[in-house]
Image (tube, rainbow, N blue to C red; front, side):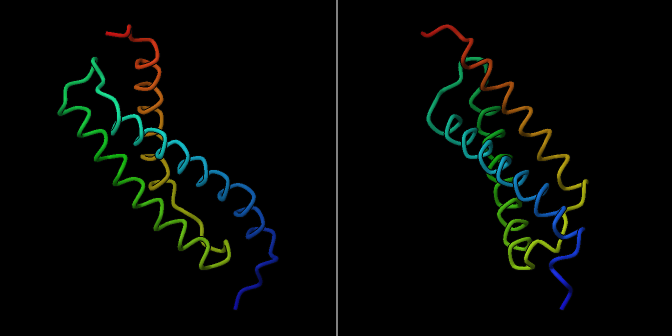
Length: 105
C-alpha cells in the first residue's frame, strides 16, 4: 500500500480537503436558498434548473469525498471536475447576492 506520509499526499489533504468542504458548504447553502425561497428575478424554470445542477454537483462532490476519504487522501481530483463546481458556486454566489439586494415584495 502506498505511503500516506508522502509530501504529495499531505499536500492533497492540506489543499483539497478544505476545498471539498467549501464546495459542500456553498452547495448546501445554495440548495437551501433555492428550495425555500421564490426568487423574483428568476423564472421558476431557471430556479429549478439551477437547483438541479446544484443537486447534481452535490452528488458528484459526495462521491469524490468518499473516494478521497477511502484512499486516505491519496487520490486527487481532476481540474476538469473542479472547474464546473467552481463556476456553479460562483453562479450561486451571484444569485444569493441578487436575492439579498432585491426589494422585499
